[in-house]
Image (cartoon, rainbow, N blue to C red; front, side, top):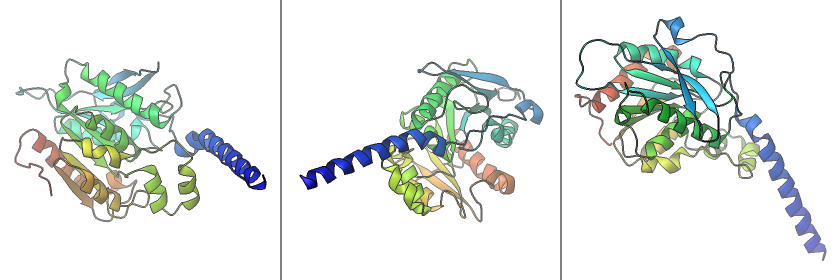
Amino acid sequence: MRLLGWTIALAAAIALLKAAVLLLEPRLAFYPLRDLPLTPGSAGLPFEDLRAATTDGLVVRGWFIPAPASGPRAGPPLTLLVFHGNAENIGQGLDLAARAHRAGYAVALAEYRGYAGNPGRPSERGLYLDGEAALRAVAARGDVDAARVVFWGRSIGAAVAGRLAAAGRGAGLILESPFTSVPDLLRDDGAWVFYALSFLGSYRFDLASVLPEVRMPVLLIHGTRDEVAPFAHSGRLHDVARGPRSILALEGGGHNDLWSGYEDDLWEGAERFLRSLDGGPEAVRPR
């Protein structure tokens, strides 16, 4: 009887701890930036609001920057559908948008619920629904070819981009500063308490489990001194990927300084990858 009592007490304690973890998980996991001090117009870019209706009843707004009208094309340009990192919002995508626009591409800066004035609260499932809604909104445009969408995900946004690519839609996948999964990240960062608690939570952002389903070309971009998502995560993702893939290693780069300190090298590698998707000479091959 005593053993039974201890067993019941332990089960109750675990159940209470799990309930507490699930309650606190959104607040501990997400750091949404709500202010938008700059717009693409501030960078001299033409843009429109991108209204994405989610299947759970929200409308989240991002930005669409059309490709420049710079002469005749054989077909619609590539469109980059960009998903930003955690403690960011679409305002942090303006450097990327400017480089892509100058190179002749269209850019959709997708936003999440709870970020940049959008309704709702972020969650893992919510971000996936927001990503699907953004893709639908982009694909519905007359100036976008859905087969020529390139998914670009940074950090936590890499998991969103990876799931869309795994569904078989689009032309390519770019993963900037990605991680394999949240539990792996907590373990590798030595956050043992949170690592243990993660097994009671629901968030996984398990990019490593969906990447083998991606058949389109993949480019991994990672700083070799990333202090948040160690560079080794890109190595593991490269190993589990099944389609054409390559790694762009930015020597000395961290997690949050790739665009401020390595922009030219980053964009040069990304544009080489994008040209390969257009049938250019820089074809991406497995290695």
